Length: 433
Ligand code: G3I
Image (cartoon, helix red, strand yellow):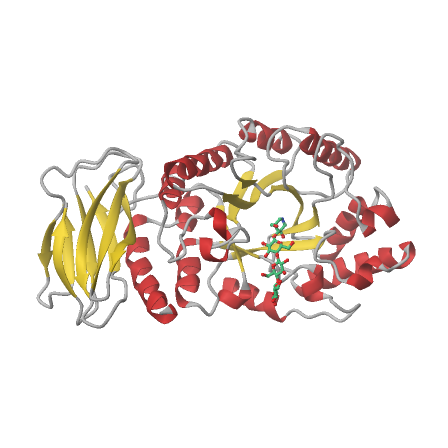
């Protein structure tokens, strides 16, 4: 079953990406990157890799560069999984964000057991060794992650670094990092700092102080993990801008938004628009490729569903980025497609393809759907099909009036007789005019 899904995912994605534009390409046209957090152990899954490779132009190792992964034993560095991600990215021209050097979590036990002087040596050695290993390969490093408490105190979070080295540990980490790889952008990264609040004020004061005193810092990462209890703040863009005004880049580093459908899509639109509205917002990273492997999978917070279908949120992001349709020029007629299996029986299944217009209204559209022989399409609805000579490739056009307003959707459906093969169809490029 897994391999059937995998095979289906690959073919479905190849076609859609080609004509609809991709997140990475659309972001690049805006002078930004669009990245995903990646886990090395999923790179061998064909639709995971093909979605990553097609859509994203930056990666962040989700766990593989953390202290426990690279230096579980003191001064014994293990880079296997992280190297795998870096070489996957480099061979495809993707950027890499480094995550993360100094963090209270995923810290091996030996670190917490050190006395202050030894801890200082260990922290600086860790930063130096890891950054030198990846020198020249990482565009931005999360040097220090999550050093402030939640809530109204604006205080530092307790950690071995804070408790034993005091407030100066952050400055020391950044100075060490600058010496280790002078070309890498050095970021402070945190969550619940996305709007103006006590925690973001504390980070703001830290950055302002660093800039005033010449402590090296180049960027601030806003993790942006959102859900109904913690929605995209109304002052998100203003908050990004006030940091940018301090003279640092800002990056959206771990974006995910729990929810579904149009509500989720519109929250994603707001995030993308906020970044595009701040000239120093240099890129967006979503915290995973597919809902299937999200750290909070039950909240379906990402842009691709469990079967690597593009969600409404994907279309919203691509549209907000000014993503292009078949013409490639931007601003013209464009559409994207998503596919889902709506019913499943032992001998047949029903599929639905949703066509979503891009940033302009479209007057007509065309989508190719290919089934795998000996499968046959037995029925269709809400569309006018035509067939190639093999009978496996169905080109679907609107029934009558094909007008779809900007950002709006229409869908058609069909029944596939399995004839022993349950795999999903390949849903190809959507073209619009
Ligand atoms: O790899 C092991 C596996 O061998 C073992 O069987 C399994 C059993 O628990 O654990 C697996 O490791 C898990 C790892 O994710 C990989 O899946 C860890 O237990 C689990 O703690 C770890 O969670 C990660 C979490 O950071 C740790 O704090 C999440 O994947 C990762 O998405 C999350 O990312 C953080 C950012 O680094 C910082 N900001 C918040 C963000 C979300 O929590």
